[in-house]
Length: 220
Image: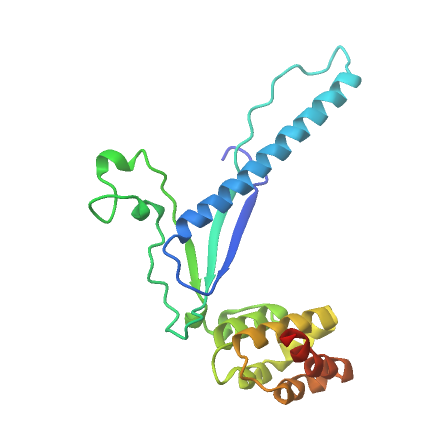
């Protein structure tokens, strides 16, 4: 580039617990919605700016028409963990062009240039080691929940990363802990209330009370 200028980049994040062959199409729809909203805001901003320039019009005011805006880049990222207890591998296609009705895996060369080309990026939670996740706190707690939520070792893993659960508690308080316990209730309903109470007991009486009462609240 001839000059340095800021670049706008969106990260479109989707959490997926089941394999969906239509994921490239779904992510493209989400991306178009984001771009439509961005263009709408750009149009409103331009109108507001034009009205302001009309009110403050001077002989030296610029009459140049600004160039049309360019769409921001967007990274379509899917965080996948297998809710069925499988190996956690994404085996469906990541390319939109494979979803078009053709006689082969991809469109014929004569048609390929006229069809949208779009590919999603998939991160497989089960294949990602904990050591690669930086930051800690709630981010790491969420990662452990996604990776081991349906595993018999989930409580052991959460105890292993208890310092991160403690950081999430200190920052987010009861609402954050309620999210963690609610997720555990849905993915591991076999966990006993006493087990959850023992997990959060070191966080204090309020945390333990939440664990002891939340199950009944969710059941109701």
